[in-house]
Image (cartoon, rainbow, N blue to C red; front, side, top):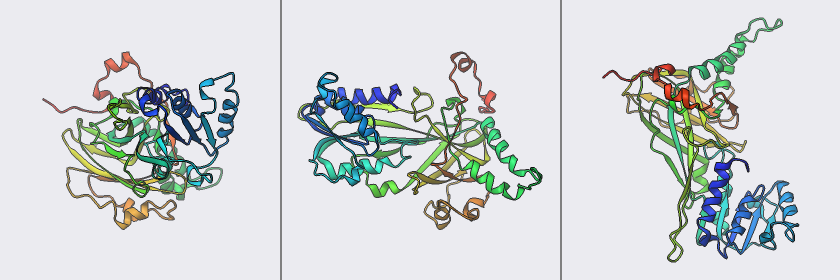
Amino acid sequence: MLIDSVRTSTYQSAIMQNHHVFQDALVMDVGAGSGVLSYFSAYAGARHVYAVEASNMARRIRQLLARTDTHNTFLKDRVTVVQSKVEDIKEELPKVDVIISEPIGVLLFHERMLESFVYARDKYLKPGGTIFPSSGSIFLSPFTDAILYTETMTKVRFWESTNFYGIDFSPLFDEAKDEYFAMPVVGHFDPKSLMAAPAAPYAMDFTTITREELLDLVIPFEWTVSYTGLIHGIGGWFDLVFTPPPIGDELGSTVSMSTAPNAANTHWQQVRFLLTEPLAVNAGDVVRGWLRCRVNAMRSYMIAGELVVNETPISDPADAGVTEALALHVEERPKWLAERVGSRRRGRWMLHEQTYAYSYQPNAATDAAFKPEFACMYPPSN
């Protein structure tokens, strides 16, 4: 993550462009990892930084701090390492002026570090203090990718084998299909594969959101489709924003970062949720739906979703069938997931069971020559 220049430079810019927030401040770095955000905070003038890190990386921070007589002298006596989860800290720590963290995973909330971030805010942040990042937004858009869909189905087809060294695997075919398509595909993808502009962003204000709200999220979306073709699934990414509260006459600088497919690459990349059956649409169609994301014991989320074309009524994400589909282990395919009604598609994805696709590489020459029909997307006739 340190060599993710977009991520690291964004955090450094947010800190250094708001050095007045950090000057003489008490700072807590939640999930400090390598300690780089603690070091940036001290460099910006923090009076003292509490670097909270549960893993053995805390030992590496201590090793670096032990050599501040000759290296990184600006850190001398200004950083205290607290080797603990923030929820399990035993020693008495003071309230702080600033909490900084990189609590972000795929689609913003994978790994569930946001809950720790919010816990630290509620327990350790002084009234009127600063929390960095201050907000995030999730974006969803429909994509088409026949190659990715075919590659996934090719893996599924293995389980049609009726004589694999004498074994008939075909009774597992339906379950195999559900499992392969439940694996979110992480990787950079071609922004030209998007069939509509992203829906209105799902915003999370980290200064006010509660831990309870993070446990079960419903993200609605509505798209007006730009092309006739097949929707193979939903693509997702996020933005981060660092907005300091005003301090005296200083308003500070807002710094933001995007992980969109047309933005500079980051280690978070993007994520795609494949449908088991593509959804045919015409240019101008309106697709509405939602993703319901509920935490699981794997420090991630189970996700259920529905898309419907040119219809206002869609099923309630809170209904019992959806809740059943969000169970981590379901012996049989949930009835709600198995229902197929016309131009409606449903899906169930396990955000912790990610697979990866690294086939897309931006190319200025081919991008300039691209036409929508190359991806089986057909614009409306004039």
